[in-house]
Image (tube, one colour):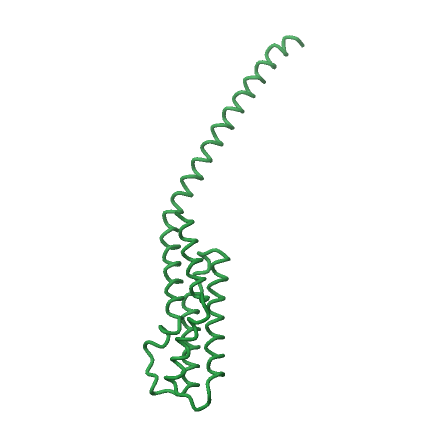
Length: 170
């Protein structure tokens, strides 16, 4: 029995040492592979995320009243037609850029959605508040001036959130 223990105990000690060393080496190798994979993934994802931020910045810019009204022939529409066209433009811009939500944080996305909702509500509310005899030019002027009078706009809040998140990336 003692003979067996003379061989078994040193063998177990050696086995334990080999196991600890191998575990340490394998763990280090696994961490290195994960780091390499993360580095390669970031190389591919970072440009995509930056494009998403750019597209959302464009969305916010394009859905501000002065940009919505820029390309429209106001003399050829009624006030109701202009309201519907503005709302349609906001919806189309939104639908075109909705997929960008997977690249931005939840807080930023919520602020972008809030900006969209508030501009749509603002367009509708201003149309309802305009006198029946007002022209599309009057409506357009009210839209552009009244939106800025409320202080910081939802578009500006969302844009600041976008910029802040991009700064955090670096």
